[in-house]
Amino acid sequence: MARSFVVQQHQATTLHYDFRLEVGGVLRSWAVPKGPSMDPAEKRLAVEVEDHSLAHGAFEGPTGRGGVIIWDRGSYEPLDAPFADALDRGKASFRLHGEKLHGAFTLVRTGGSERKPQWLLIKQRDDEADGTGPVAERPESVVSGKTLDEVQRS
Ligand code: MN
Image 1 (spheres, rainbow, N blue to C red):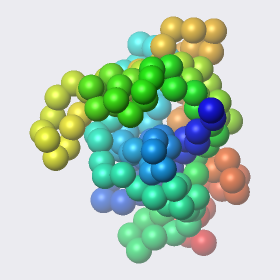
Image 2 (image 1 turned 30 degrees about the vertical axis):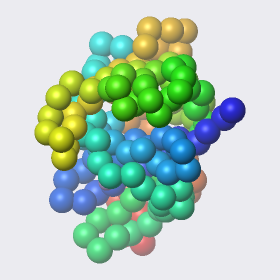
Image 3 (image 1 turned 90 degrees about the horizontal axis):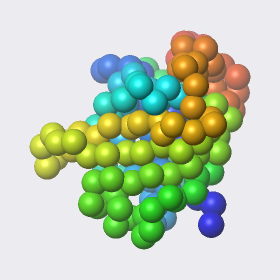
């Protein structure tokens, strides 16, 4: 069963990427300061944050202090089952079918506090893995084609 994922680039106090996976009717969410990488050697810090509604994943626009763009979205296949249990145990793999992100990834919890658990988002080695950096090379929204700067000025 295909479920949705979305990555929103978000300028708030700091710039980050909100990585969200649809699980059980909500979006499980992680703030990734550097954004996802397609390079398995680039393990990206992902700080777990509160669940968000599915509707939140469709938001793009200016906010009071910054803005949000939908940087990537698509579907994903869980590679662990039950997927919610795998997340609760602190290690879950999944295959993304986005416009920029493709292939298998793993989220693994490494520590942090109970309120702000820290994870790593890691590209698995597969045919989709490569050294390109979609964060740098494809900064635009997959919905509007606008950059975050353009959305904030609108
Ligand atoms: Mn955010």
